[in-house]
Image (tube, rainbow, N blue to C red; front, top):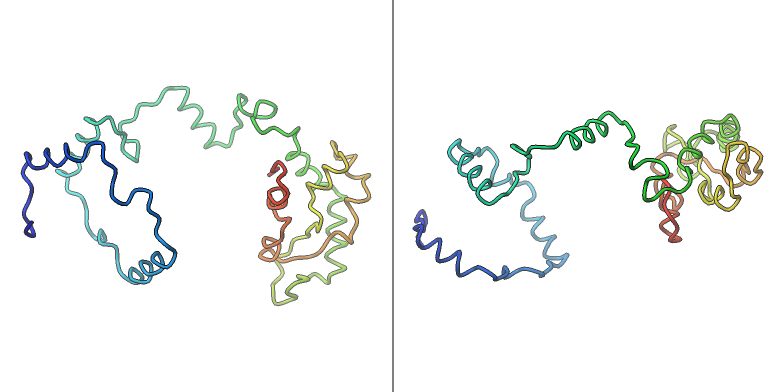
Length: 216
């Protein structure tokens, strides 16, 4: 087919019918890492083929009509009519309001309120004293990188905080305060934020590593 030449409607319909029920030639075929890297290197520094190009009003109208005929909702959800219940759920999510129908004990992954407990313990004076002891012992610098790693520091439990709460069956802040193992400074260290994020116990990584439920 010559450049600039267009298919007639009849030809397009014949092509459409011939393709019905057939999958694309590359379906299920995965590109190798080497091939992906080659594509990446070729495209680096080159602008997108769509850069500076805008759809005309006529094209937008055609796309809109096509979507309506096929029952397809555009990506930006233009024209989508939402129920009042859905609108209210969206509003609550944007305002940060917890939905009572999926919060607390009604949530599918409810673990007895351990997330709220962890936050409460971290706000306690005992936790503040433990953190200060760790910082003083390590000279207020990252034990992995020293002063060169800056002064944005975290106090890190070598054996994860969640594991200690679970093993000692801690359910309240008072139980946490009286647990000696939780405040053992030998189980703590000072790390800068980047180093802390690399540890096996940062966030939910320790739970994933030993295939236990994840508590965020």
